Length: 240
Image: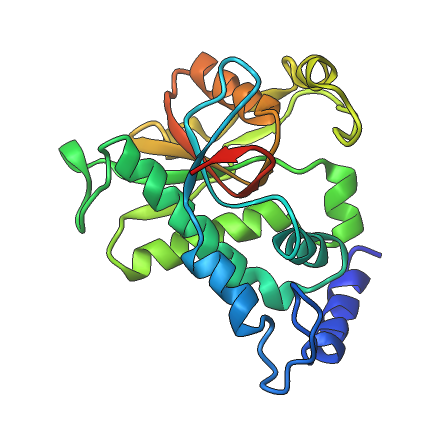
């Protein structure tokens, strides 16, 4: 059955391309987003987020997690709006660029300081979620963001260097402390050789309390890989 959903999603894209993936207004142009919603991703932020959980790496996002960006992300992840991936991936690339710039580690063509490249490490999706969606939507966003940055000369690649070490519950509806406990020790690092010589930036679609990013940073740190920062498309708590 996993192969059925991507085909269904593609057909849904064709049927939905007349409507903006953010505000839902008809789009005679056939573009996935209207100019206003596209502008929110292209021109908003990036902001430094306010994390509630200790150990969360320095994180930037381009938008608050509210409509119409919230609708875009739900449409992309849950409703098969794969036509939104390019715009969302470009937004994620903007957040990555701000994280690199804020850490004074923005590389130039040919490599950053001491020839270091940038590795975008996506937050791993649960296997059940990947089966239901037909793909790892976060990993796809990371690859799109990496491709966008390479187009402007940034030496970057996306590496799925994290995986689940144990089962976790859905984070929705959990308190800050429950989120921390749910994720404590839940991740482990892999493919260390692919990121060991890179400046590592964690990427995800949304940041809330920061618990997921903090656990990801811990798992990589235990494996001897420091994390430069993190980037998301939206954040529940941000400051200008």
